[in-house]
Image (cartoon, helix red, strand yellow):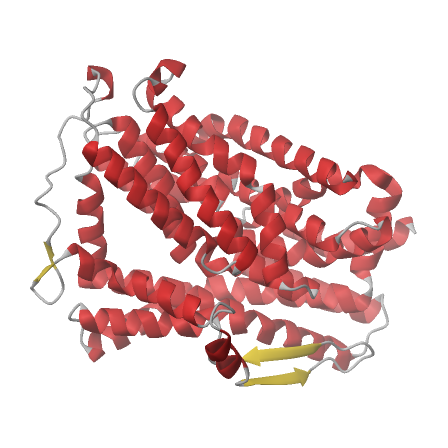
Amino acid sequence: MLLQVILAVIPIAWLIVSMTVFKMSGFKACGIGLIITGIECLAVYGMSVAEVATGTLEGALSAIWPIGIIMFGAMFLYNMSLHTGAMEVIKNMLSSVSNDKRVAALLLGWCFGNFMEGIAGFGTAVAIPAAMMVGMGFDPIASAVICLIGNAASPAFGAIGTPTLSAANTAGLDANLLSSPTALLLSGLCILSPFIIVFLVGKSVKAFKGVIGITIASVVSFYVPFYAVAAFVGPELSVVIGALVSLVVVIVMGRSSKAEIPEEYRLEKEGDAAATETVAATGKAMKPMIAWVPYILVVIFLLGASKLCPPINQALGAIKSTFVFYAGEGGAKVSFSWINTPGVLIFIAAIIGSLIQGASIGDIGKQFAGTIKKYWKAVATVVFIVSIAKLMGYAGMVLALANGLVALTGGFYPIIAPLIGGIGCFVTGSATSACVMFAKLQTEIASQLNIDPYWLVAANSAGATAGKMISPQSIAMAAAAISVAGSDGKIMSATIKWCGLYIVIVCVMCYVGALL
């Protein structure tokens, strides 16, 4: 049994060593990891060339559709917002809300950061708000740390729910049923993050004086709709809607506050409320409502195509194809929904919204090509990881790992289940990759321990969100955003204690929940 576990852990060990010790990019490390896995399947586990090839094909196509199309769609939407000037309008609008550093930190590091995570992901949730905060006069290191902490609650549902959808797809679970326990396990992080953000701004509990109401409101207005959408609709819009509601609440409360701002919390320059228009790529001034149009369309399209609207959901859902790719025994059925998939709906929303904002067909084509050119390696990395996971599953490596962990930890395994996801995200820098790597492992262990598999897969996703806080890729993104050379170590040291606290909270919640 020990030999089986050692052999099964080789692909995962390679990913950890290659990216942490050798500092290899995820694209190269995962590509080599797929080759190692394929060779091991042939030489050790007795799989045929046809089985390895078709298992890899199944993984690749499952990664491209729907995961890859969502990734491209999310970043295409963001790139079009930059091109048309819509993102600049949104930035100006948010900057004009309050002259109070504490309110501004909540608005940018919490509300807007989570909105960007839900819509785009891939570091935008840290880079954009952190750069905005520095521009408003915040300390660069503090800005990066605040945005990393604010982002800790949502990566499991980032980029229109990609990590949760990916975990469900890999583990053979229902994504809508998986999103509810995932959101529940993230409750501690959602409640704590805004309070920690305010604490970091003032470096003391005294910072809550005068803003305790808006801090509590930012928590409640985010988590209640976040959980409701996750539990009753699905993972795609949970963070987006929660962040939008929280954004509106904090803007209204920030603008209407008449309380005097203590000198130490006052921004150097008050935002100019008139600066909510900017000149877009078309040369015309853009109103704030027009700037939000593509994002509003995303929400409308995804809700309209969800189970909340059965006729539309059923009609679009019927346009699909189902295949069995794997040539060996136990090949899974793989379904491709050609229209009712988040990535397609995001592309449609982005195109319509961009046209409304004045972009030309040529502009849209250019940004589409640029998005593919810039992010194809990120999608290829996910393709490699999903393929590795598929091969490990068909070869029996996942079962061997599950047996080893159960033998080692027994009934105490749930307390370390989130840590598995945290390690995966720390190594890969991607919650999606961490979910794909270990979702099947969590379901195998759940089966052996007679625990609800949804609970352990959700724990893996929740742990991944916490691990992303200190992922070298996340830290590098934050450091680039604040333009302070050599700041990675400072950001890491300031963030790691909060990551440790979050991991402990999720681990305890997972263990207690598994006992109930």
